[in-house]
Length: 155
Image 1: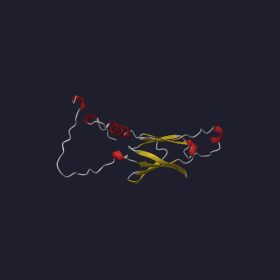
Image 2: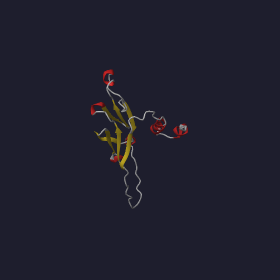
Image 3: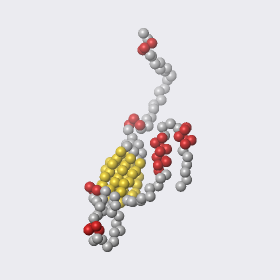
Image 4: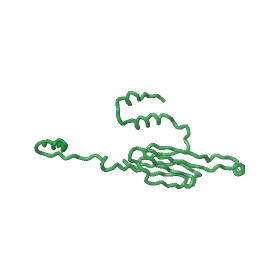
């Protein structure tokens, strides 16, 4: 993977620190691909993350949503030597995991369902009314000067 130096961009921009940090942190590839997952875009503002968590129960899974971060973790109890001796072959992963997803601004978790070994997390992006684009009406007529008066000098 190529390394890009973002220093010149950091020097000439203001307020993009989070974006540059996200780019730099995404370069570090996760070596652990467990559990496998899918990310779907259902519509313009709806997403679905599905993780294959076969063998996990609801009480062994934790979903934590923070600002711009979704963290999914699974904690399996350690299997003692007495129980392990019963297996002739262990091919199903039975280990704890932690998976993190960076979320865009205003994305929140709407729902989470565990069914048939798949953990499905529904996400929705809700932009506040104040942040949505507004159409500005153009008033006909003459330009009116707006004069700001300073009450402290009026005395």
